[in-house]
Amino acid sequence: MQRGINGDAETDTTKKKISSQVPINDTTPPVITFIQPNSTNELVVIKTYNILVNITDDNPPLPGDVVIQVSNQSIFLFNASMILTGNSLWRFNWINLTSYPNQENYTLKVWAKDSSPNGNSKWSEEYLIFLSWQNSLSILQFVIYIISVSFIFACILVYLNKKGLYKSGKKKRKRKKEIFKD
Image (cartoon, rainbow, N blue to C red):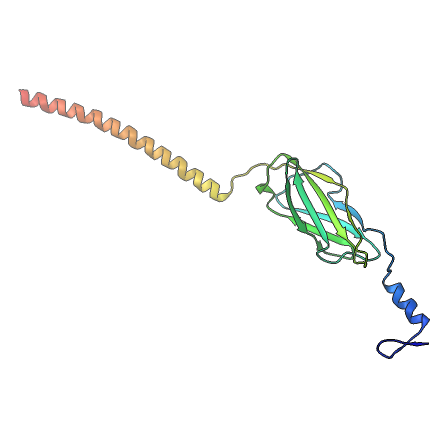
């Protein structure tokens, strides 16, 4: 029996217990499985989309060690941390999809690093989603549209009214001239 640093007795059974809790020789990266999208080339027609992945490992990743990368066909768009929502379920809520170009493919990849001392990491396979939604006018856009149409209509009325008043004014002047000639 040996004495540890703090004076407690260390036995072979305590060493086995400690070493079985944290496998030091973990060289396996996390296994990343997409749940949503559930197939590549998925069609997305909503304005907010949850991306869900299942990540399994003997030493599961810690928050901040799971990142999603989103890009379209021409450029890299962003990286974002995913949120742990269950035992091995991670989620990213992609909001404001209407601010991204419509009718395009987007590539999703997830990177995860396990919590082992070796810090094994891996990128998932790429998943493609296709964004397609109908552009609908928001209330603000609708109000601006109504104001613009009303303004144009008012300008046309003013123009036509001035043109009509000018002609009627000419007629009145002609009549006044005729009256004065007599």
